[in-house]
Length: 237
Image (cartoon, rainbow, N blue to C red):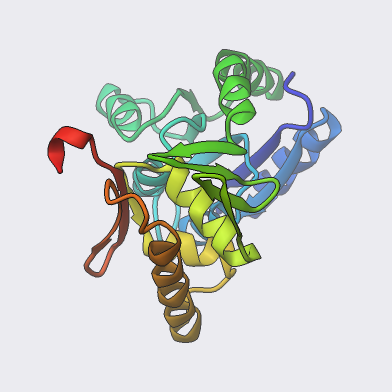
């Protein structure tokens, strides 16, 4: 079992959800229960999860849609679907949505635990290697130390504020990808309201200024959606 693994459980049947939550906690997994897909996405945006366990048929937002949205911002976190359906096309749809495994109801707690352990084992090695590199980043001619909150270029250091530091780390973890605006706001500000959105735009502008000594580095706005962070090759300039 992955040490201190944290599971996000989305299940609209609260009796089953609470039962699963209590069982997984008893087995050593920190487990957070969401009662629908929207609530699950908002919890996921706050970070810290090692595995997602999603019911397929949920109100507000179904498990397939939820998984697709999460895969846009995190390509590697393991996702297991829980479903009462067993038709082949539903299974295929689940894997197309980004699932790592699929278990049909009714199932035994022991089978579910075995599948969780197996999926976490498969992902733990690559995740450990990834986490070792997540505090130091090379951004063109810049070096970014997330733990020390320092951005360095040509022996010149820029101390970052807490928000600048968190925002730059998210950008670095998503180089070349679309970083969703709502996800970013909820991950760093805990709320995607208008005032926080304006605040984030100010911090994006500050980061652009901090990074303007290397013209290969670009934070590009994606209108209405978010940002893309690029470090262009010299041949592209």
